[in-house]
Structures are given as structure tokens and as C-alpha cells.
Image (cartoon, rainbow, N blue to C red; front, side, top):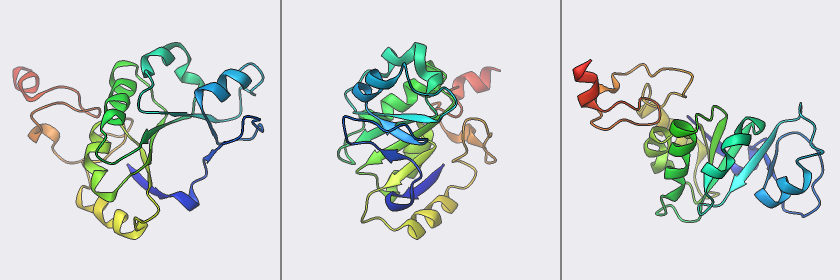
Length: 172
């Protein structure tokens, strides 16, 4: 997992109704519906979802998106954690899952355990402090394609990186 400062993120959110076709654009569901037929298939596009959107409705079209950004309106609102886990574990989404909105450094471990790859920090958060915090969890915060180095069997419950709970590991 990695933290990104909002002012240095290569993904750009499109706020206008009229969408310019350029790589690394984050579109809302409504914007995507307007342009999906004419969007070049070789151009990376991302989707921004509110935390009330049902990610299961995207099941057939997930492979089209290089990134899916899930919004945290407040750091205490955990619905985006559930969305990320659904995307990663049940829908087998392999692209970049990004946390946006009210994202704090302290959210690193739960973000990683539920399937997030990238967290765009809130403007008042220090990127250097965030990088130091990630070193504290080194080995636990790997991405889905990269197995963790540390022993993850200490977790009672499974997570997006290793979905089997302890009782299933012991039985094997």
C-alpha cells in the first residue's frame, strides 16, 4: 500500500459534465455512462464511487477500469472499507483501489487489510509522516499480487490479502 499527496496524484478527478478524453481520469458513474461507448480501450480510466454506491452492480464491467476510487466523506465512515473488500474478495477486482476524501495516516492498516492499494491523503496530512507510518507495518501492507513478508497468521479473521481465518489455516 502507498500514500499519495493530493497535489501529486497522477489521477485527475473530472468535475465537469463534459469529459475530455485523456489518460488517468477519474469519472463518476454518470460521466462514465455518457462516454463509455466512445472511450478508447487502450486509455486508462478510473471510476469514483460514493460510499453509498453498490459496487456489485459493476461486476460485469470492472475489467474496464484501471482504478476505482472509493470516497470517505468522514474518516469515521467505514462504508468504503466494505466496498473495497467486496471489490477485492468477492468480485476479484485486480486494479488499483484508491481511498479518497477524509483519509488519515492512521487508517493505513485497515485500508490495506480491506484491499486498498493507494490512499490519497487529506490536505492537512504530512506525506513524510505517512511514509514513516507505513514502515512500521512493513510486510503487512503488501498488494494482492505481492504476498506479505510477515507472518499473517496472527490475524484471527481473514482480510482482503489473506481471506482465510485462523481456524481454516489450522485445519489445513
